[in-house]
Length: 85
Length: 280
Image 1 (cartoon, rainbow over the protein chains, first blue to last red):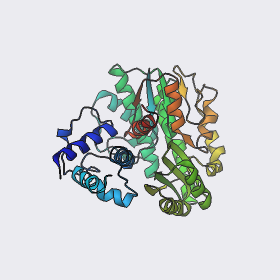
Image 2 (cartoon, one colour; image 1 turned 90 degrees about the horizontal axis):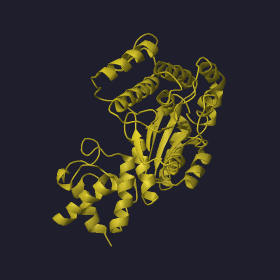
Image 3 (cartoon, each protein chain N blue to C red; image 1 turned 135 degrees about the vertical axis):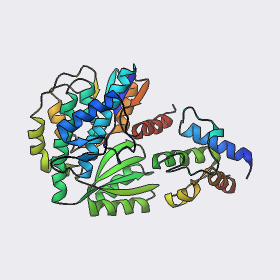
Protein backbone atom coordinates (compact mmCIF):
# COMPACT_ATOMS: atom_id res chain seq x y z
CA UNK A 1 0.00 0.00 0.00
CA UNK A 2 1.51 3.34 -1.04
CA UNK A 3 2.12 5.66 1.90
CA UNK A 4 1.04 8.55 -0.29
CA UNK A 5 -2.44 7.08 -0.76
CA UNK A 6 -2.74 6.51 2.99
CA UNK A 7 -1.93 10.17 3.59
CA UNK A 8 -4.39 11.24 0.88
CA UNK A 9 -7.16 9.21 2.49
CA UNK A 10 -6.49 10.81 5.86
CA UNK A 11 -6.66 14.26 4.29
CA UNK A 12 -9.84 13.29 2.43
CA UNK A 13 -11.46 12.29 5.73
CA UNK A 14 -10.47 15.58 7.35
CA UNK A 15 -11.69 17.62 4.39
CA UNK A 16 -14.92 15.71 3.72
CA UNK A 17 -15.95 15.66 7.37
CA UNK A 18 -14.60 19.18 8.00
CA UNK A 19 -12.78 18.02 11.11
CA UNK A 20 -11.29 21.12 12.67
CA UNK A 21 -7.89 21.13 14.33
CA UNK A 22 -6.82 17.65 13.21
CA UNK A 23 -3.88 16.78 10.97
CA UNK A 24 -3.39 13.55 8.97
CA UNK A 25 -0.58 12.59 11.31
CA UNK A 26 -3.06 12.41 14.19
CA UNK A 27 -5.16 9.72 12.50
CA UNK A 28 -4.04 6.17 13.22
CA UNK A 29 -3.88 4.23 9.95
CA UNK A 30 -5.27 1.06 11.54
CA UNK A 31 -7.68 2.48 14.13
CA UNK A 32 -11.42 1.82 13.62
CA UNK A 33 -13.13 4.73 11.90
CA UNK A 34 -16.46 4.07 13.62
CA UNK A 35 -17.31 3.64 17.27
CA UNK A 36 -14.24 3.72 19.46
CA UNK A 37 -11.87 5.08 16.82
CA UNK A 38 -12.66 8.37 15.10
CA UNK A 39 -16.26 7.99 16.28
CA UNK A 40 -17.85 8.33 12.86
CA UNK A 41 -21.51 7.44 12.17
CA UNK A 42 -23.77 6.69 9.20
CA UNK A 43 -24.04 10.39 8.30
CA UNK A 44 -20.24 10.55 8.10
CA UNK A 45 -20.10 7.29 6.14
CA UNK A 46 -22.35 8.65 3.41
CA UNK A 47 -20.27 11.83 3.26
CA UNK A 48 -17.14 9.70 2.78
CA UNK A 49 -18.84 7.62 0.08
CA UNK A 50 -19.54 10.82 -1.88
CA UNK A 51 -16.00 12.09 -1.33
CA UNK A 52 -14.46 8.80 -2.54
CA UNK A 53 -16.60 8.82 -5.65
CA UNK A 54 -15.77 12.44 -6.39
CA UNK A 55 -12.05 12.18 -5.70
CA UNK A 56 -11.26 8.69 -7.00
CA UNK A 57 -14.29 7.56 -9.02
CA UNK A 58 -14.75 4.68 -6.58
CA UNK A 59 -18.26 3.55 -5.70
CA UNK A 60 -19.23 1.98 -2.37
CA UNK A 61 -22.53 0.47 -3.43
CA UNK A 62 -24.11 -0.48 -0.13
CA UNK A 63 -23.74 -0.61 3.62
CA UNK A 64 -22.41 -4.17 3.58
CA UNK A 65 -19.49 -3.10 1.40
CA UNK A 66 -19.16 0.07 3.45
CA UNK A 67 -18.79 -1.94 6.65
CA UNK A 68 -15.77 -3.72 5.18
CA UNK A 69 -14.30 -0.64 3.48
CA UNK A 70 -14.63 1.74 6.43
CA UNK A 71 -12.88 -0.44 8.99
CA UNK A 72 -9.81 1.80 8.96
CA UNK A 73 -7.84 4.23 6.83
CA UNK A 74 -5.82 1.29 5.54
CA UNK A 75 -8.91 -0.61 4.32
CA UNK A 76 -10.28 2.54 2.66
CA UNK A 77 -6.96 3.05 0.86
CA UNK A 78 -6.87 -0.61 -0.19
CA UNK A 79 -10.39 -0.39 -1.62
CA UNK A 80 -9.48 2.75 -3.56
CA UNK A 81 -6.28 1.19 -4.88
CA UNK A 82 -8.19 -1.86 -6.12
CA UNK A 83 -11.13 -0.04 -7.65
CA UNK A 84 -10.10 3.40 -8.80
CA UNK A 85 -10.51 4.28 -12.46
CA UNK B 1 -24.73 36.19 12.72
CA UNK B 2 -24.77 33.32 15.22
CA UNK B 3 -27.60 30.78 15.27
CA UNK B 4 -28.19 28.51 18.25
CA UNK B 5 -29.77 25.36 16.86
CA UNK B 6 -31.42 22.94 19.26
CA UNK B 7 -31.41 19.22 18.30
CA UNK B 8 -34.13 16.63 18.81
CA UNK B 9 -34.16 13.64 21.14
CA UNK B 10 -30.73 12.05 21.66
CA UNK B 11 -30.35 8.31 21.10
CA UNK B 12 -28.37 7.75 24.27
CA UNK B 13 -27.59 9.42 27.59
CA UNK B 14 -24.27 11.27 27.71
CA UNK B 15 -21.67 8.98 29.23
CA UNK B 16 -20.10 11.69 31.36
CA UNK B 17 -21.78 14.76 32.77
CA UNK B 18 -20.17 18.11 33.54
CA UNK B 19 -19.39 19.28 37.04
CA UNK B 20 -19.95 23.02 37.21
CA UNK B 21 -22.41 25.51 38.66
CA UNK B 22 -24.58 25.70 35.52
CA UNK B 23 -24.95 21.93 35.40
CA UNK B 24 -25.76 21.69 39.10
CA UNK B 25 -28.45 24.37 38.69
CA UNK B 26 -30.02 22.63 35.69
CA UNK B 27 -29.80 19.28 37.50
CA UNK B 28 -31.64 20.72 40.50
CA UNK B 29 -34.29 22.23 38.22
CA UNK B 30 -34.79 18.97 36.30
CA UNK B 31 -35.11 17.02 39.54
CA UNK B 32 -37.62 19.49 40.96
CA UNK B 33 -39.79 19.78 37.84
CA UNK B 34 -39.56 16.28 36.31
CA UNK B 35 -38.09 13.93 38.92
CA UNK B 36 -35.20 13.03 36.62
CA UNK B 37 -31.72 13.00 38.13
CA UNK B 38 -29.35 14.06 35.35
CA UNK B 39 -26.34 12.71 37.20
CA UNK B 40 -27.41 9.06 36.93
CA UNK B 41 -30.46 9.31 34.60
CA UNK B 42 -32.77 7.72 37.17
CA UNK B 43 -36.14 9.15 38.05
CA UNK B 44 -38.00 9.34 41.33
CA UNK B 45 -41.70 8.84 41.80
CA UNK B 46 -43.75 7.76 38.83
CA UNK B 47 -41.64 5.84 36.35
CA UNK B 48 -40.86 7.53 33.07
CA UNK B 49 -40.17 5.44 30.01
CA UNK B 50 -36.63 5.30 28.65
CA UNK B 51 -37.68 7.61 25.81
CA UNK B 52 -39.21 10.22 28.10
CA UNK B 53 -36.09 10.18 30.27
CA UNK B 54 -33.99 10.65 27.12
CA UNK B 55 -36.24 13.54 26.06
CA UNK B 56 -35.91 15.29 29.42
CA UNK B 57 -32.18 14.54 29.47
CA UNK B 58 -31.80 16.03 25.97
CA UNK B 59 -33.69 19.20 26.85
CA UNK B 60 -31.81 19.60 30.14
CA UNK B 61 -28.45 19.24 28.43
CA UNK B 62 -29.49 21.82 25.84
CA UNK B 63 -30.47 24.22 28.60
CA UNK B 64 -27.13 23.59 30.29
CA UNK B 65 -25.07 24.13 27.12
CA UNK B 66 -27.07 27.27 26.35
CA UNK B 67 -26.23 28.73 29.77
CA UNK B 68 -22.57 27.77 29.43
CA UNK B 69 -22.20 29.20 25.94
CA UNK B 70 -23.76 32.50 26.97
CA UNK B 71 -21.56 32.64 30.06
CA UNK B 72 -18.53 32.15 27.79
CA UNK B 73 -19.68 35.04 25.59
CA UNK B 74 -21.30 33.24 22.65
CA UNK B 75 -24.52 35.12 22.03
CA UNK B 76 -27.08 34.06 19.42
CA UNK B 77 -28.91 36.43 17.10
CA UNK B 78 -31.39 33.81 15.99
CA UNK B 79 -32.76 30.49 17.32
CA UNK B 80 -33.64 27.34 15.37
CA UNK B 81 -35.01 23.99 16.46
CA UNK B 82 -35.35 20.42 15.26
CA UNK B 83 -38.27 18.36 16.62
CA UNK B 84 -38.27 18.41 20.44
CA UNK B 85 -35.49 21.00 20.29
CA UNK B 86 -38.44 23.39 20.34
CA UNK B 87 -38.63 23.15 24.16
CA UNK B 88 -35.13 24.47 25.00
CA UNK B 89 -35.38 26.77 21.96
CA UNK B 90 -38.39 28.48 23.54
CA UNK B 91 -36.39 28.92 26.74
CA UNK B 92 -33.39 30.26 24.83
CA UNK B 93 -35.45 33.04 23.29
CA UNK B 94 -37.24 33.91 26.51
CA UNK B 95 -40.66 32.55 25.53
CA UNK B 96 -40.68 30.05 28.40
CA UNK B 97 -38.84 29.59 31.72
CA UNK B 98 -36.25 26.79 31.80
CA UNK B 99 -38.24 24.93 34.44
CA UNK B 100 -41.43 25.13 32.40
CA UNK B 101 -39.57 23.84 29.33
CA UNK B 102 -38.37 20.82 31.30
CA UNK B 103 -41.77 20.13 32.84
CA UNK B 104 -43.57 20.51 29.53
CA UNK B 105 -41.12 18.11 27.87
CA UNK B 106 -41.80 15.54 30.59
CA UNK B 107 -45.59 15.94 30.49
CA UNK B 108 -45.81 15.82 26.69
CA UNK B 109 -43.38 12.90 26.65
CA UNK B 110 -45.49 10.97 29.14
CA UNK B 111 -48.66 11.76 27.17
CA UNK B 112 -47.28 10.45 23.90
CA UNK B 113 -45.60 7.50 25.66
CA UNK B 114 -49.08 6.31 26.60
CA UNK B 115 -49.64 5.62 22.90
CA UNK B 116 -46.97 2.95 23.23
CA UNK B 117 -49.13 1.02 25.69
CA UNK B 118 -51.87 0.67 23.06
CA UNK B 119 -49.74 -0.13 20.01
CA UNK B 120 -46.10 -0.62 19.02
CA UNK B 121 -44.25 1.99 17.02
CA UNK B 122 -40.84 2.57 15.50
CA UNK B 123 -38.76 5.10 13.66
CA UNK B 124 -36.70 4.16 10.63
CA UNK B 125 -33.44 5.95 9.90
CA UNK B 126 -32.63 5.89 6.17
CA UNK B 127 -29.56 7.28 4.40
CA UNK B 128 -28.67 7.30 0.73
CA UNK B 129 -32.07 7.41 -0.97
CA UNK B 130 -33.62 10.66 -2.16
CA UNK B 131 -37.08 11.75 -1.07
CA UNK B 132 -39.05 10.53 -4.09
CA UNK B 133 -38.19 6.80 -3.94
CA UNK B 134 -38.38 6.84 -0.17
CA UNK B 135 -41.83 8.40 -0.34
CA UNK B 136 -42.88 5.48 -2.54
CA UNK B 137 -41.44 3.04 0.01
CA UNK B 138 -43.32 4.83 2.80
CA UNK B 139 -46.60 4.70 0.91
CA UNK B 140 -46.13 1.01 0.04
CA UNK B 141 -45.81 0.18 3.73
CA UNK B 142 -48.25 2.61 5.33
CA UNK B 143 -45.62 4.68 7.13
CA UNK B 144 -44.73 8.36 7.01
CA UNK B 145 -41.71 10.49 6.18
CA UNK B 146 -41.12 12.16 9.53
CA UNK B 147 -37.80 14.00 9.10
CA UNK B 148 -36.37 15.54 5.93
CA UNK B 149 -32.92 16.15 7.36
CA UNK B 150 -30.94 16.47 4.11
CA UNK B 151 -31.44 15.38 0.52
CA UNK B 152 -30.38 11.87 1.58
CA UNK B 153 -31.04 11.56 5.33
CA UNK B 154 -34.58 10.78 6.42
CA UNK B 155 -36.61 9.37 9.27
CA UNK B 156 -39.68 7.21 8.79
CA UNK B 157 -42.38 6.90 11.44
CA UNK B 158 -45.28 4.54 12.00
CA UNK B 159 -46.38 1.22 13.42
CA UNK B 160 -43.38 -0.94 14.19
CA UNK B 161 -44.04 -3.83 11.79
CA UNK B 162 -44.71 -1.42 8.95
CA UNK B 163 -41.55 0.56 9.66
CA UNK B 164 -39.50 -2.64 9.73
CA UNK B 165 -40.97 -3.64 6.37
CA UNK B 166 -40.25 -0.18 4.98
CA UNK B 167 -36.66 -0.35 6.20
CA UNK B 168 -36.18 -3.68 4.43
CA UNK B 169 -37.70 -2.29 1.23
CA UNK B 170 -35.54 0.84 1.46
CA UNK B 171 -32.43 -1.35 1.55
CA UNK B 172 -33.68 -3.31 -1.47
CA UNK B 173 -34.30 0.01 -3.22
CA UNK B 174 -30.68 1.11 -2.79
CA UNK B 175 -30.53 2.86 0.57
CA UNK B 176 -26.98 3.04 1.88
CA UNK B 177 -28.09 2.41 5.45
CA UNK B 178 -31.52 1.71 6.91
CA UNK B 179 -32.43 0.60 10.40
CA UNK B 180 -35.36 0.88 12.75
CA UNK B 181 -35.60 1.93 16.40
CA UNK B 182 -38.51 1.13 18.69
CA UNK B 183 -40.18 4.26 20.08
CA UNK B 184 -43.15 5.21 22.25
CA UNK B 185 -45.15 6.95 19.54
CA UNK B 186 -45.27 7.59 15.77
CA UNK B 187 -43.65 11.00 16.09
CA UNK B 188 -44.12 13.59 13.34
CA UNK B 189 -46.86 11.60 11.63
CA UNK B 190 -50.63 12.07 11.30
CA UNK B 191 -51.07 9.18 13.76
CA UNK B 192 -50.17 11.65 16.52
CA UNK B 193 -53.53 13.37 16.06
CA UNK B 194 -54.90 10.65 18.35
CA UNK B 195 -53.50 12.58 21.33
CA UNK B 196 -53.88 16.15 19.98
CA UNK B 197 -56.62 16.98 22.50
CA UNK B 198 -54.54 15.85 25.47
CA UNK B 199 -51.53 17.75 24.13
CA UNK B 200 -53.62 20.93 23.84
CA UNK B 201 -54.67 20.54 27.48
CA UNK B 202 -51.04 20.24 28.59
CA UNK B 203 -49.83 23.17 26.51
CA UNK B 204 -52.76 25.24 27.79
CA UNK B 205 -51.32 25.13 31.30
CA UNK B 206 -48.36 27.34 30.31
CA UNK B 207 -47.99 31.05 29.59
CA UNK B 208 -45.80 31.98 26.67
CA UNK B 209 -43.96 35.28 26.41
CA UNK B 210 -43.01 37.01 23.17
CA UNK B 211 -39.63 35.63 21.98
CA UNK B 212 -36.84 38.16 22.44
CA UNK B 213 -34.91 36.58 19.56
CA UNK B 214 -36.24 35.37 16.18
CA UNK B 215 -37.33 31.73 16.57
CA UNK B 216 -37.52 29.92 13.21
CA UNK B 217 -39.79 26.90 13.07
CA UNK B 218 -38.94 23.63 11.28
CA UNK B 219 -42.24 23.28 9.42
CA UNK B 220 -42.53 26.35 7.20
CA UNK B 221 -39.43 28.30 8.32
CA UNK B 222 -41.53 31.21 9.56
CA UNK B 223 -40.80 32.94 12.85
CA UNK B 224 -42.91 31.93 15.83
CA UNK B 225 -44.66 34.48 18.03
CA UNK B 226 -46.00 33.85 21.54
CA UNK B 227 -49.48 33.46 20.08
CA UNK B 228 -48.23 30.84 17.57
CA UNK B 229 -46.48 28.62 20.12
CA UNK B 230 -49.34 26.67 21.77
CA UNK B 231 -50.78 25.39 18.49
CA UNK B 232 -47.33 24.87 16.97
CA UNK B 233 -46.39 22.57 19.87
CA UNK B 234 -49.38 20.34 19.10
CA UNK B 235 -49.21 20.55 15.30
CA UNK B 236 -45.48 19.90 14.97
CA UNK B 237 -45.86 16.41 16.42
CA UNK B 238 -48.18 15.45 13.54
CA UNK B 239 -46.11 17.03 10.77
CA UNK B 240 -42.63 16.29 9.39
CA UNK B 241 -39.48 18.13 10.41
CA UNK B 242 -37.98 19.93 7.40
CA UNK B 243 -34.42 20.54 8.54
CA UNK B 244 -32.81 20.97 5.10
CA UNK B 245 -35.20 23.81 4.28
CA UNK B 246 -34.66 25.29 7.73
CA UNK B 247 -30.88 25.27 7.35
CA UNK B 248 -31.15 26.90 3.92
CA UNK B 249 -33.58 29.53 5.24
CA UNK B 250 -31.25 30.33 8.13
CA UNK B 251 -28.34 30.80 5.74
CA UNK B 252 -30.50 33.03 3.54
CA UNK B 253 -31.40 35.05 6.64
CA UNK B 254 -27.71 35.80 7.14
CA UNK B 255 -26.55 33.16 9.60
CA UNK B 256 -22.77 32.82 9.33
CA UNK B 257 -22.14 30.51 12.27
CA UNK B 258 -24.25 27.60 13.50
CA UNK B 259 -23.80 26.40 17.07
CA UNK B 260 -25.45 23.09 18.00
CA UNK B 261 -26.69 23.42 21.56
CA UNK B 262 -27.33 19.99 23.02
CA UNK B 263 -26.31 16.36 22.97
CA UNK B 264 -24.40 15.13 19.91
CA UNK B 265 -23.65 16.81 16.61
CA UNK B 266 -26.26 15.49 14.18
CA UNK B 267 -27.46 18.95 13.08
CA UNK B 268 -23.88 20.04 12.46
CA UNK B 269 -23.42 16.98 10.25
CA UNK B 270 -26.67 17.60 8.37
CA UNK B 271 -25.55 21.20 7.80
CA UNK B 272 -22.20 19.97 6.53
CA UNK B 273 -23.96 17.79 3.97
CA UNK B 274 -26.33 20.60 2.95
CA UNK B 275 -23.43 23.05 2.63
CA UNK B 276 -21.38 20.61 0.54
CA UNK B 277 -24.28 20.18 -1.87
CA UNK B 278 -24.63 23.95 -2.08
CA UNK B 279 -20.97 24.29 -3.00
CA UNK B 280 -20.01 25.80 0.34
